[in-house]
Image (cartoon, rainbow, N blue to C red):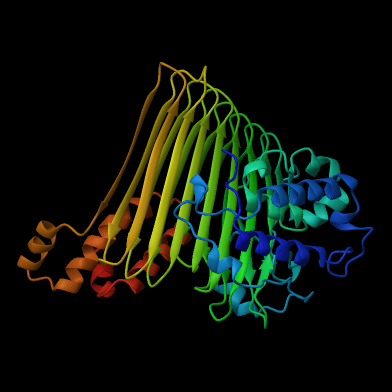
Length: 458
C-alpha cells in the first residue's frame, strides 16, 4: 500500500527534519572523513538511498493502514538534535546496572561504540564481534555483502531514516560450524542532554551454516529528558544454524524507541526471539521474519508492560516463503492506568509454501478501565496445504479466580498480584537465559503490589 498523502503539518515537519539532516556534518561529527563508514562509496550510496526513500515516504500518519492507531504528533512536535561528540563518559555503575556477568558485551553510548566499557573474552577463530564502523573500515566487503540487503526501506520510513544516518552499531559474524559458547550482549545507552537528542544504531548479525549463538540486545536511557532511539537490526541465520535472541527495551519514560528487526532464516534453521518491553514513553517495534529455506523453525514471543501514559506498538510480519516451515508467535500485554498498546500481526504464506504450520496469538490483560489495546492478527495464505491459526484476547482478571484466592484468606492486592504474575509467567518461563529471566522476575515482583508475597509463592 502506498503512503497516504501527507498533511501540511507533517509536510512542514518533514522539511524541518530534512534541514536538520543537512546540518549533520559532512565528516560525520568530527571524525576523519576518509575513515570508517565514510571511506566506502557503497556506504555513501546506501545513505543516499535511505534519505531518498525517507523523503519520498515522509512520516507515517494515521491515514496509513500500518499506523492507523499510532499517532506520531508528539514526536513531530519535538525538535531532536544530534548529540555532541563526547567520550564514553557514562558512569561505569550505570553500565553495570544493565550488564550480565560471563557474557561478551559491546556497549554503545548514544549510538557510538564505547570500547572502554566493552568486554570480549576469547572468541573462536571464525567469530568476529566488533563495531559496525570498525568492520566497515577493516573488512568492508564482508559487511557490504549483507548490510542493507534485507530491511525494507521502500515502505518503512524509520528504517529508511536509520539507513540515511548509517554510522555505527554492532557487527557480528559467526563462521560456519562455530559455536559462541558465551552469550553476546549488545547494550545501547542513551544519555540525557540539554536538548532532545537522537541516535540511530545499526546492527548486522550474520551466522554461517551449522553455527550457534545466544544474543541479547538491550536498550536503556535516562528518564528526565526526551530522546529518540531509532534502531535497526538485520539478522541473517544460515542453514541448520541455531539462534537464541532476546531484545530488552528499558528506555526512559520520556524516550521514543522506534525499532526495526529483520530476520532471514535459511534451511532447517531454528530461531527463537523474545521481545520484552518494560520502559519507554512511546515504543514501536517492527519485526519481519522471512523463512527462506525448507524446514525452518521460528518462535517470536513478546511481553509488554505499560502504565501511566506509555504507548507500545508491536507490528509483526512472518513471511513463509519455503515449504515445511513452522512459526509460533505469542505476545502478551499487561496494561495499567491510561496506557495504550497496539498489536498487529500477519502470517503471509507464499505460493508453494506447502505444509506451513503457523500459529499467532495475542493476549492482553487490562487492569484499568482507561487502558486500551487495539489488536489485529491476520492471515494471508496462497497455498492450499497449510495449518495456520490466529487469535487475540482482551480481558480483565478472572473474578472467579480472584474470589477463590480471597476465600483462602489471601488479601485483595496479593490475590491480584498472584493472578497478574500467573498471566506473565507463561512468557517468563520461556526465557532460557537465566540472568535475564531472574531480572524479569525481580522486575515483576517489584512492580506488583504485595510482590514479596508473590516471590514467596513462586
